Length: 174
Image (cartoon, rainbow, N blue to C red; front, side):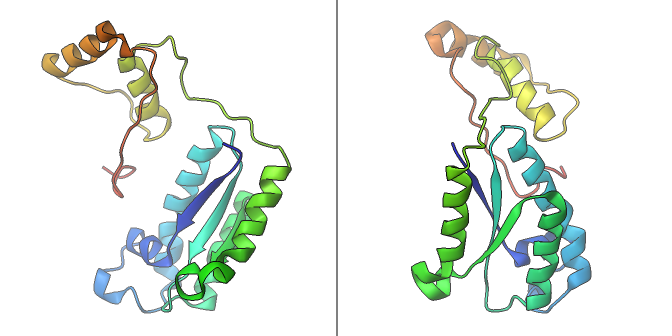
């Protein structure tokens, strides 16, 4: 990959900042700022793969200019680009600035993609590497039945395959 587009919404960031769903339509810069470490964590994780990132704010009608500006400034401090994308309401024209930024990043050839683990590692060790490096786990555990499945996958020839791990919106906090 030459570039990652990390899509963020002000609504989600405010939820990470403690706002209840019924109150998301109101401007709340304090909650937004409390939720920004979640965005930062995603940016940090993407950078671990050696791929440049641009943050795309998926614009909603309830977003305010103050909220947009808070995220843009936060991204500037992280040294990543941030673009407002109003493609939902404005179609392709609403994503034009984002698309131009992606092209510029791709043409800069700054991507140096790498995985978090070596192909030769066991599936268990690959999974542990992801858990530690992406989610901040100290270790992983599983009962014998699960460990045996990992071993069977390896015996069946899948040991050199990469790991694809799903996450929830709570993966960093639980």
